[in-house]
Length: 141
Image (cartoon, rainbow, N blue to C red; front, top):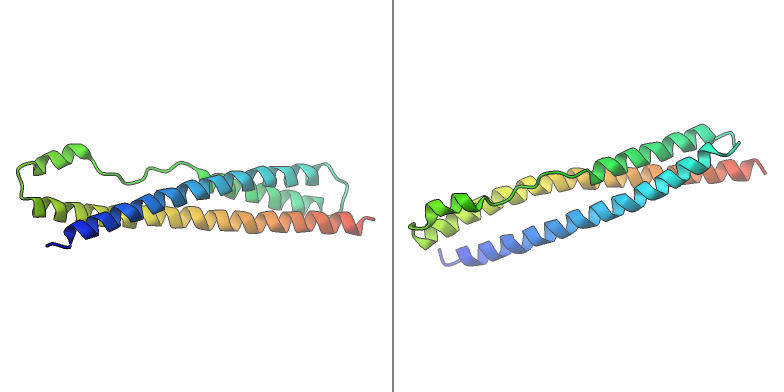
């Protein structure tokens, strides 16, 4: 049981890394949302033949960016439940914490995977919207 402390520290570092990744995805989704709105607005106000497709792709990218950045409840320790372990042996408490952290990380990574996929699809749609708009502009000249 001497490795329990090392495992707990590793879980805590992984949790911090995941929280940083969540913030990063939210920031990127905000940038994609801004550009998607810009591309959709430009497409809406032009007379190019591909205007409808570019507008649709821009709005789709914006929708996915919003879905990616939508706040979600992350699993967290409930300090009040730790009170049950005040008189327990330290190794038992550490073991319970390891199990709890493991479950929390698994749940958080499922949410993070969903957010990351939505962001990736939003970025692809944004690129397609921009490309469609650019091709439409070039072809009308």
